[in-house]
Image (cartoon, rainbow over all chains, first blue to last red; front, top):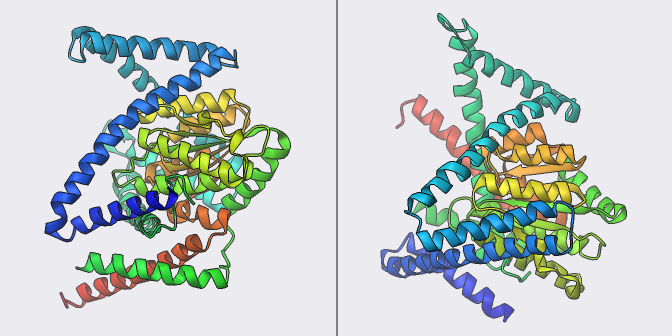
Length: 203
Length: 243
């Protein structure tokens, strides 16, 4: 079974890859990608069942935070039922989306501002090294450069230093990091393609 | 044609170097985050606390699949080492397909440790389907499940700050790695140890001591030098007006 899974995974990976270089393999590639999208849809359902099972177990065992798990189950089943009965286009579902889900996500985004600010404050507690000091100084410089005064940009910092740091140093560094990440992703993908890594339950 | 050549050349190099590394194990430079991670693995078993491995919300069908696969390789090693603990590690994912693979990988880790009967399917979870709902669900694990260390390996954006903050409030350590630039900056500030850039993909080599992972690091180094040569050559060529 393990060998069969590996053979299928490697063959599908190779066909999809070849599809990018050989036009003749494109129809097969599209078909496999469509299958993958369908399976991903089914996986969403499995994910929801998993979430339900985890939180149901927490409620049953009266674990710490179990009340939140009960709320999650109620909200999940309620929303699912409403979606099936009313359909997503219904005004009630739109209210549910715009009145509860979007504000909660927006609230988390707002909370993020405080979390990042707090992380910057405690950075020097974690990292009392040159990198930490440079990180804080650069962040402060960019902040100062981005803040505008009634008459415009902060002189020198906003007009000269900030563009120099963001467009030359930061952009160059980001590109270097992204090239490194791409190379890492390439070799990780190749390891899966040659069957050396089997994230589907094998090695 | 160039892309195909790079792919085929890299694959060949990877196979050859994997065979080579099996005979002579690689000597890797010290990365503090991995040193701390290895230390943490041992401590978590002794402390009776669990590890929480967050794999982010990278989709396997898009460009973030690489970081998701790297996260799964890390999870596999960690699960195998901590499965016999009273408090086995728990993994969370923010993508349904990744969630399925998380369960499969966790199961494989238990099998490899010969304790398959101890495997619990809820050890691998999908906590949300959007970045923030995923973070909210994963924060709940950190706060309520006796977690000593949060290991974030995968695709994370700024929402990683929420996870790091939740860990800080629960007096848990955070070790973070993301393929996203914003996520890396946030993790650098918010976590005790952060992996920058391609270090995310080195986890398998540092934790698992596997020949193919070590070989892929060497392939990355070779490709990096090629990229440097091409960029420097291109810049010189442009400067002298060759093209």
